[in-house]
Length: 247
Image (cartoon, rainbow, N blue to C red; front, side, top):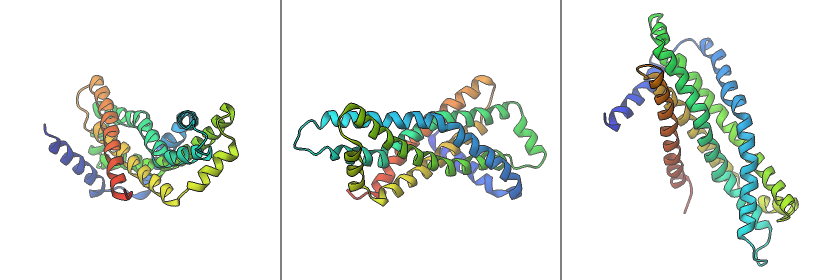
């Protein structure tokens, strides 16, 4: 089937969440549960990746700027701007596409092959909204928070790496980061995080919801969710950069 078929099916899936919504109190408990699963459940991997991301970027940048003509504060400028604009939102979201996306697709896909979704429909419940909407809302809320945490920890990792390697002091790093900081860069990073959060959760819900077959097909849906989410993150990353950044 063509890409237009799947894209149209995806749009119809999103529309079905709002055609017959349940009462708000039905979603509250599920929303908080999904926020814990996506946010708290992903926190350890985000912490680990962010610290080493900042550390590695600092060391490699210091290695490239070996000339004494360039002040060491430039390292802080480059690492800080790269972290806020690109590394924290994009790398974190790609990792979450693997962790969160695969979990969502496999969870909903398992419910599909076990006929639990059919049972929800028989009871008159809008299964797409009941299963998908809390996950999408939780992703839109929690992934930007995880990105903010990633930015902070990447800066901490950069400061520690600069100090331990002797490339630059903490004061030099902070001076460089503060001199180049722009509020718009942080706002743009959060715009990307909101967009990526929606992409990860909605695409994963879509692939899980339309799973057909057995356990093997659940694995295939999980893989497709991760692959397509990652591709759309990269495509939207470029489109947002073209749209919001003046070149």
